[in-house]
Length: 174
Image (cartoon, rainbow, N blue to C red; front, side, top):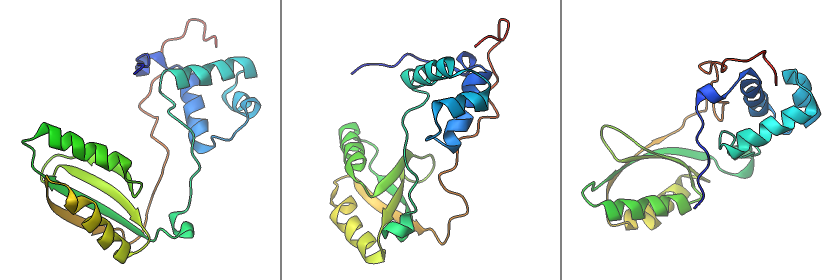
Protein backbone atom coordinates (compact mmCIF):
# COMPACT_ATOMS: atom_id res chain seq x y z
CA UNK A 1 0.00 0.00 0.00
CA UNK A 2 1.58 3.29 -1.09
CA UNK A 3 1.23 6.34 1.06
CA UNK A 4 0.55 9.77 -0.32
CA UNK A 5 2.73 12.63 0.85
CA UNK A 6 1.06 14.54 3.65
CA UNK A 7 -0.09 18.07 3.12
CA UNK A 8 -1.42 20.78 5.35
CA UNK A 9 -3.39 23.91 4.71
CA UNK A 10 -0.07 25.77 5.00
CA UNK A 11 1.02 24.01 1.78
CA UNK A 12 -1.84 25.56 -0.19
CA UNK A 13 -1.48 28.99 -1.73
CA UNK A 14 -4.16 31.23 -3.22
CA UNK A 15 -3.90 29.55 -6.64
CA UNK A 16 -4.36 26.06 -5.13
CA UNK A 17 -7.39 27.26 -3.16
CA UNK A 18 -8.82 28.88 -6.29
CA UNK A 19 -8.31 25.66 -8.25
CA UNK A 20 -10.18 23.68 -5.58
CA UNK A 21 -13.06 26.16 -5.61
CA UNK A 22 -13.43 26.11 -9.39
CA UNK A 23 -13.11 22.33 -9.73
CA UNK A 24 -15.72 21.69 -7.03
CA UNK A 25 -18.21 23.67 -9.10
CA UNK A 26 -17.20 22.28 -12.50
CA UNK A 27 -14.76 19.36 -12.66
CA UNK A 28 -15.21 19.19 -16.43
CA UNK A 29 -13.75 22.64 -17.00
CA UNK A 30 -10.91 22.66 -19.50
CA UNK A 31 -7.42 23.37 -18.22
CA UNK A 32 -7.34 26.55 -20.35
CA UNK A 33 -10.59 27.81 -18.81
CA UNK A 34 -9.42 26.83 -15.32
CA UNK A 35 -6.17 28.72 -15.88
CA UNK A 36 -8.09 31.82 -17.01
CA UNK A 37 -10.43 31.56 -14.01
CA UNK A 38 -7.58 31.52 -11.49
CA UNK A 39 -5.25 33.94 -13.28
CA UNK A 40 -2.42 31.63 -14.32
CA UNK A 41 -1.25 30.23 -17.62
CA UNK A 42 -2.19 26.70 -18.64
CA UNK A 43 1.08 24.86 -17.88
CA UNK A 44 1.46 25.90 -14.22
CA UNK A 45 -2.27 25.36 -13.67
CA UNK A 46 -1.98 21.79 -14.99
CA UNK A 47 1.08 21.14 -12.78
CA UNK A 48 -0.79 22.45 -9.73
CA UNK A 49 -3.82 20.22 -10.40
CA UNK A 50 -1.52 17.20 -10.78
CA UNK A 51 0.25 18.12 -7.52
CA UNK A 52 -3.10 18.43 -5.68
CA UNK A 53 -4.06 14.99 -7.02
CA UNK A 54 -0.72 13.46 -6.00
CA UNK A 55 -1.02 14.95 -2.50
CA UNK A 56 -4.48 13.41 -2.16
CA UNK A 57 -6.19 16.80 -1.77
CA UNK A 58 -8.16 16.04 -4.95
CA UNK A 59 -9.29 12.44 -4.55
CA UNK A 60 -11.33 11.97 -7.73
CA UNK A 61 -13.88 13.33 -10.17
CA UNK A 62 -17.50 12.21 -10.31
CA UNK A 63 -20.76 12.96 -12.06
CA UNK A 64 -23.61 14.16 -9.87
CA UNK A 65 -26.69 12.05 -10.59
CA UNK A 66 -30.26 12.84 -9.58
CA UNK A 67 -31.09 9.74 -7.53
CA UNK A 68 -34.84 10.07 -8.16
CA UNK A 69 -34.39 10.01 -11.94
CA UNK A 70 -32.70 6.62 -11.70
CA UNK A 71 -35.30 5.12 -9.36
CA UNK A 72 -33.68 5.61 -5.94
CA UNK A 73 -36.67 7.15 -4.19
CA UNK A 74 -35.79 6.37 -0.58
CA UNK A 75 -32.94 8.01 1.31
CA UNK A 76 -32.52 6.60 4.80
CA UNK A 77 -30.22 7.56 7.65
CA UNK A 78 -29.53 4.44 9.68
CA UNK A 79 -27.91 4.46 13.10
CA UNK A 80 -26.41 1.04 13.72
CA UNK A 81 -25.84 -0.06 17.31
CA UNK A 82 -23.19 -2.74 17.64
CA UNK A 83 -21.23 -4.56 20.29
CA UNK A 84 -18.11 -2.45 20.73
CA UNK A 85 -16.07 -4.98 22.69
CA UNK A 86 -14.81 -6.98 19.70
CA UNK A 87 -12.41 -5.16 17.36
CA UNK A 88 -12.24 -8.02 14.85
CA UNK A 89 -16.01 -8.16 14.46
CA UNK A 90 -16.19 -4.37 14.12
CA UNK A 91 -13.55 -4.48 11.36
CA UNK A 92 -15.55 -7.20 9.61
CA UNK A 93 -18.62 -4.96 9.77
CA UNK A 94 -16.62 -2.03 8.34
CA UNK A 95 -15.43 -4.24 5.48
CA UNK A 96 -19.00 -5.35 4.76
CA UNK A 97 -20.32 -1.78 4.80
CA UNK A 98 -17.67 -0.72 2.26
CA UNK A 99 -18.97 -3.41 -0.12
CA UNK A 100 -22.66 -2.43 -0.03
CA UNK A 101 -23.52 -0.12 -2.94
CA UNK A 102 -26.68 1.01 -1.13
CA UNK A 103 -24.52 2.69 1.53
CA UNK A 104 -23.33 5.98 0.07
CA UNK A 105 -21.73 7.25 3.29
CA UNK A 106 -20.82 5.78 6.68
CA UNK A 107 -19.46 7.49 9.77
CA UNK A 108 -18.43 6.43 13.23
CA UNK A 109 -20.54 8.52 15.55
CA UNK A 110 -20.41 9.70 19.13
CA UNK A 111 -23.23 9.19 21.58
CA UNK A 112 -25.75 6.42 21.04
CA UNK A 113 -24.87 4.03 18.25
CA UNK A 114 -21.68 3.05 16.52
CA UNK A 115 -22.22 3.94 12.87
CA UNK A 116 -24.46 6.31 10.94
CA UNK A 117 -25.18 5.11 7.40
CA UNK A 118 -26.67 6.98 4.49
CA UNK A 119 -28.59 4.41 2.45
CA UNK A 120 -30.27 4.75 -0.95
CA UNK A 121 -32.84 2.23 -2.20
CA UNK A 122 -35.76 2.19 -4.61
CA UNK A 123 -38.62 2.02 -2.10
CA UNK A 124 -39.59 1.04 1.45
CA UNK A 125 -39.96 -2.64 0.55
CA UNK A 126 -36.42 -2.62 -0.85
CA UNK A 127 -35.19 -0.99 2.37
CA UNK A 128 -36.90 -3.64 4.47
CA UNK A 129 -35.41 -6.45 2.38
CA UNK A 130 -31.97 -4.84 2.48
CA UNK A 131 -31.94 -4.55 6.28
CA UNK A 132 -33.09 -8.14 6.76
CA UNK A 133 -30.70 -9.58 4.17
CA UNK A 134 -27.64 -7.54 5.13
CA UNK A 135 -27.52 -5.65 8.41
CA UNK A 136 -29.41 -8.07 10.63
CA UNK A 137 -27.36 -11.01 9.37
CA UNK A 138 -24.17 -9.57 10.84
CA UNK A 139 -23.26 -10.99 14.25
CA UNK A 140 -22.55 -7.82 16.21
CA UNK A 141 -25.48 -5.65 15.08
CA UNK A 142 -27.72 -5.09 18.11
CA UNK A 143 -30.24 -2.61 16.75
CA UNK A 144 -31.08 -0.17 13.96
CA UNK A 145 -32.69 3.24 14.17
CA UNK A 146 -33.84 4.60 10.82
CA UNK A 147 -34.91 8.08 9.79
CA UNK A 148 -36.18 8.68 6.27
CA UNK A 149 -35.55 11.84 4.32
CA UNK A 150 -38.76 13.71 3.64
CA UNK A 151 -37.01 16.10 1.23
CA UNK A 152 -33.54 17.35 0.47
CA UNK A 153 -32.72 20.93 1.38
CA UNK A 154 -29.06 20.65 0.32
CA UNK A 155 -27.14 17.69 -1.01
CA UNK A 156 -23.75 17.04 -2.53
CA UNK A 157 -22.52 20.53 -1.87
CA UNK A 158 -18.99 21.73 -2.37
CA UNK A 159 -16.70 21.72 0.66
CA UNK A 160 -16.29 25.09 2.38
CA UNK A 161 -12.89 26.61 1.63
CA UNK A 162 -13.15 29.89 3.54
CA UNK A 163 -11.02 28.60 6.43
CA UNK A 164 -8.04 28.02 4.13
CA UNK A 165 -5.57 30.84 4.25
CA UNK A 166 -2.98 30.94 1.51
CA UNK A 167 0.60 30.09 2.41
CA UNK A 168 2.95 33.09 2.48
CA UNK A 169 4.15 33.96 -0.98
CA UNK A 170 7.66 34.96 -2.03
CA UNK A 171 6.91 37.52 -4.68
CA UNK A 172 3.54 35.82 -5.25
CA UNK A 173 4.83 33.71 -8.14
CA UNK A 174 3.04 30.63 -9.45
